[in-house]
Length: 63
Image 1 (cartoon, rainbow, N blue to C red):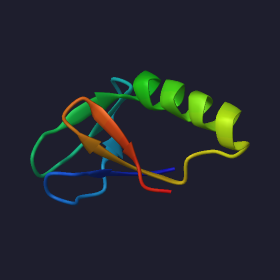
Image 2: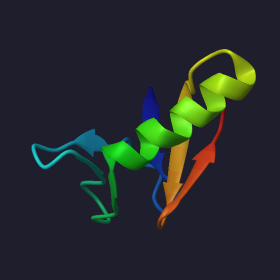
Image 3: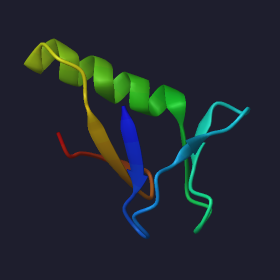
């Protein structure tokens, strides 16, 4: 799954503390939150999220 930062557009990287982290603006989100959102999406649409954007604590599904 591709995860990008809504604020600056950077691809977010996984850190050793189980978070997605934006190297440019320091935005972070826990991987567990994205996994939960993906589980809900998969149950409804029968496929995984391909791309998500992070805006603060909000997870925006792009496709």
